[in-house]
Image 1 (cartoon, rainbow, N blue to C red):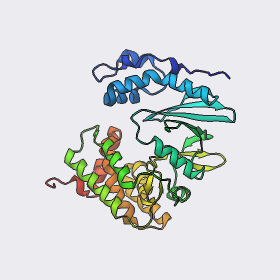
Image 2: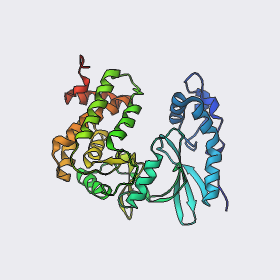
Image 3: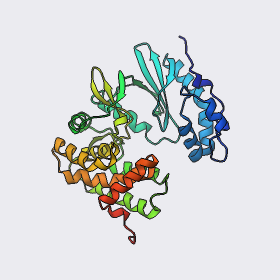
Image 4: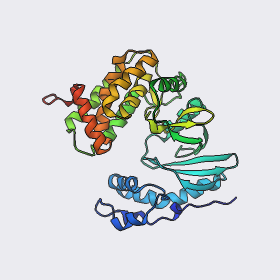
Length: 324
């Protein structure tokens, strides 16, 4: 067995990325799309996790080689899209696959593996192998594997029907717990558009919504953006990268509605998917309003500004001044 190492496995030391929290421009010019992780993602890791991120970036090539040897894989090029993982295309004995290596600070790797096992390929990619701690996953490679941009509300409702399975693995976090993690990330508040009090109110509002939901929970994807839904030639739409929890369809529906473009059309998308699912539109729209706060904190600058304008148009309670 030959392990073909991409250029990413011999990239420059990540210590050269770290310069008082700034990207070194000369290094930016030398790096290419073949790097194990994009320059912006690597810098974000270094900014927020310091030495732990440096150590991980130093160790990652050896970690990838180790799992390639254990699972008899030929390593190909890195794949784009991982924000808390390194993702590599690989070739196994049964054909193309994906090797996903979670960063040490990832808080979703166990849930991802458990959800993929529970779905068993119904509406999601198949889990082919995993490490004992779920930090290394061998995943099905989808062809063509393009993101499902342009997906309709009816398409989403059909996908949710396949994903919303009533059997939930033991230990799966509740929706309220998953929201706490999501708002922990939102406190990064990349653009400073919200005050700490506003983020706290938005967190409280979202958790309250989770706790008053009626009916038994189902398996919830938890991060159902179009980039996390791939097109398969032979199996239709398939979900990837879940932040899985014991939740409800309404949450996944709102997550999709609030993260599509244009941002201002989120209420219309929410209403359409509610109709396709046969649930009250107001149920989805309440979640759209709550989740917009996360977009304001973590999306790109232009999208964050548009999300703030949407929250203002919706009259979001968590935006109001003078509240405790």
